[in-house]
Length: 70
Image (cartoon, rainbow, N blue to C red; front, side, top):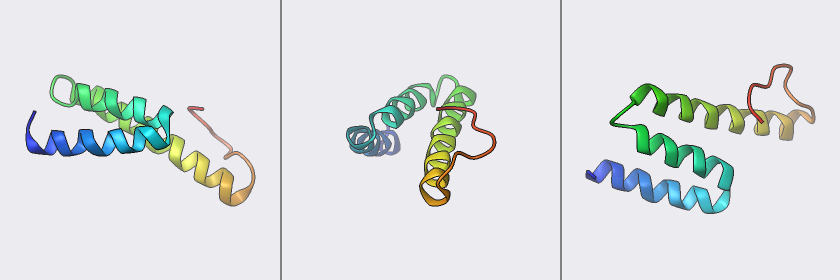
């Protein structure tokens, strides 16, 4: 594992302790980073969508019109 992967892994561990469901997706994305970059990006996209949906709900008070992942 190179230095960048190690740093990402450490940051994912910290996030995973705070938000377990997101941490699991990010750990999976890190696992696929070298072997299957497309799958890694897909996992990262899911995390970003979940974060944005949560932020939208928190700020607006309702679910966005189109939610892909819960």
